Length: 281
Image 1: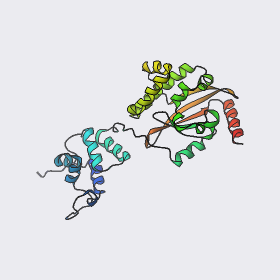
Image 2: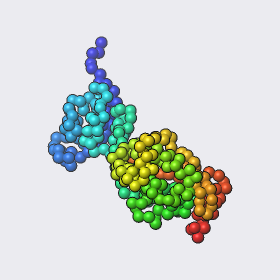
Image 3: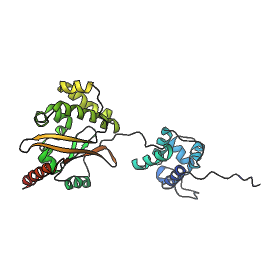
């Protein structure tokens, strides 16, 4: 009987770790390049950078030793200088789930995202942060919802507009219901984006300036499945309108979401299209 030890088959996690370490430049990371038979870092060098046992790291590449902890995977991701996408893939392979969200708010949107918004005319569309600051919009949003370009950046916030500006109260058929829905959805968005600390200054500000916001926020209402809804407004010239509201995550940007307002009926679509076209003319 052949008693040779057969190594375990290489796991998907092990293959990915091996591939990533072979892509790194040892010299750029302060390691000697002498007497290397293969490209990239050695296993013990990755372990050194990750502050873990070389034996444990070797076992991970070989598919042994059980599942790693999220902390260990985070250290390895840092050691291998993984991008956010690569880090997420590492966690999916190692734990079967993405890593905990790390909220990073960045400025502005790419020209590609702006072109997507522009292509949606005459349906109003915006891009907002986890703090619900509106950072991009199309022409239809300016005409039908709010002229964000006329406002200073610090006032392009949906919560500030709803609770501190008198216009939404005239536009909404049931302002209080809308305000409660918005706050519940806002809580969910902030939590999903890992932005609790980032939104706290806004919450403190509005709690000080709006007794209604303070009372509603204290109710701790959560709104599930808020990615789709119907929004009713009373337009100053077109009268009552209904929009199908849909919110989408922006790929690669945990700090952003896109919101599109499609006319709910053919009649509303005709009115809105005509209004947007006349404004462009």
